Image 1: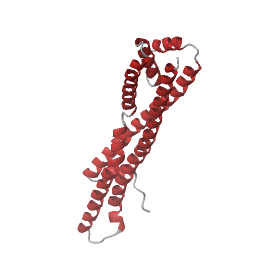
Image 2 (image 1 turned 90 degrees about the vertical axis):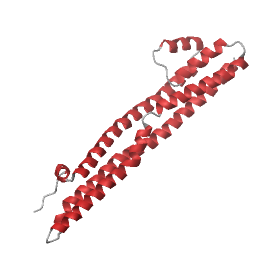
Image 3 (image 1 turned 45 degrees about the horizontal axis):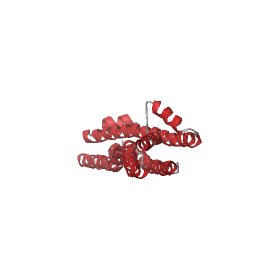
Image 4 (image 1 turned 60 degrees about the vertical axis):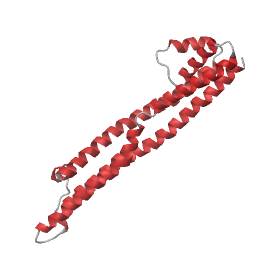
Length: 215
């Protein structure tokens, strides 16, 4: 009875080009999963920080004390950094109208820089999602070519003669999809999450400016 070929048997029995394709896809898949986990952790934490900071800020009765507490922290990001900059800028200017343009520009710069940090790694995920299927397809085509070219050397043609070559070719296709699909899902989720986070930054900034203007 014919036994099924294991992945290792298919890999070591494959041609050199197909082996290189499989190795590349494994590297892309492994690296993309690192970026996927990093993006999930970073964006989930950013959303949590937004909720916690807004809850503390809008429930605080003493803005100056809240500002001092925030300044004591070693790391400022997101709403915390926006609040600190806005509070410091309002304290510098005696004329409220003069300060508004400067503060608005400072807020926009902060949000843009934070957006850049949140988007780190997205270009890699996008690249993996785009090129992995084509790399896998290249390995598939090469494997199929090798399988059928070997038929010319056989006096009798049977499915058993081409099955290993076809199998190794399909493995390349499967690995291409294995690398691309999670990267694409993570990329789309990350883009949507970043848009939501940036919108929260902008809404908080507008509400913060209004609260200072009303004082």
